[in-house]
Image 1 (tube, rainbow, N blue to C red):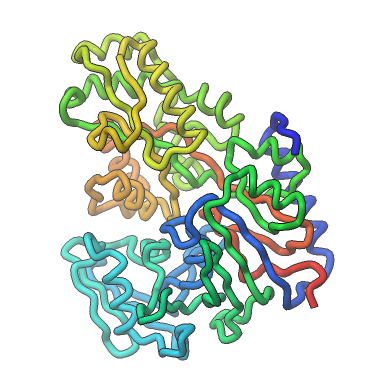
Image 2 (cartoon, one colour):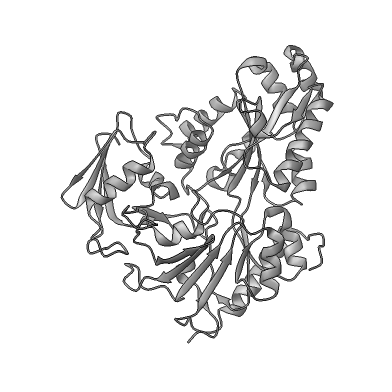
Length: 449
């Protein structure tokens, strides 16, 4: 497969539209096997695609990011959002035949956040679950749509049992084989089986797609143009992955002016234009523009002169930058940031995370699952290890909370990137949820009988 440069993202969107128009000409049919390849672990939170096919949450997001009922059919808040009650969908069973009871769901949810739950108490009341918190929990319904809160029943089998559209048939050498759940509460999925193979390099994924060994593979943001030029059918999400520099406030960086110097030195335009080929959007906001409308209030421009003025507290020892879950693109980003800092008079170097557990700077990629701005801010601050503000229920309070945190310069947002998949011509009706997850239950295979 020839590697070539990209055209703008708007062209890839056009190709997607044409592809979807072509594959939707005939009615969906039941049957067939779908083959998916990924770089990561199929069970990993939050990206494991097998996990999202086997398990359901109390709530879920549609392809527009709208919150919908899942295993809970309705919910209501009480006591100024300190108490929430969720009523469960009746008649749902786990794949092993056990009934989905409030007690079983409560056990699963408690295990999913054993270290720090948003709630302080969880109990079963009739056919409902009651969550109580010492602090208000206005975003709890949106929070429960995250992949970490998918409901599973632990038992003696190798894999836990879920209630999702597919059940686990076999796991062999990293390949997860799934079979359609004929009793799924939203209706049987179209395909009979799904095979998910993890730990596959991008080169192997694209090769397998080209020769018909895979039906769906990953396309990183920096390769979207190449995928279009290679005439792959591609479906991309809105920007949903935040690339952010987490900055320590201890040691050499206890001085907030020095942290501000780092923020001013970073050249987002170069990252956006050169490394990611103008895919996604540069950002100095924690939340994407399409979720809040106020991202433009956080300036993204570089100012090397001001960075020089604020760097007075810099010591002689180099600042250490590590990468959380490194890959080829984040390695390039880290190296570019080090050059930016040196241009501003700050000494820095990239080191492996294994050799520097307490780094000054950590480059992180945070996948935003929430479709709600307030829940999204909570999610990002949690991933950054920061305290979540109690009141972000209106746009002004949300903006104020984000601005107050960013003024500490303990996090420097860089880019928001889309998620994308390439798929074979026999895949029909593929859609993505708001966070870029493929909606496999609605996919059918061309020619299936």
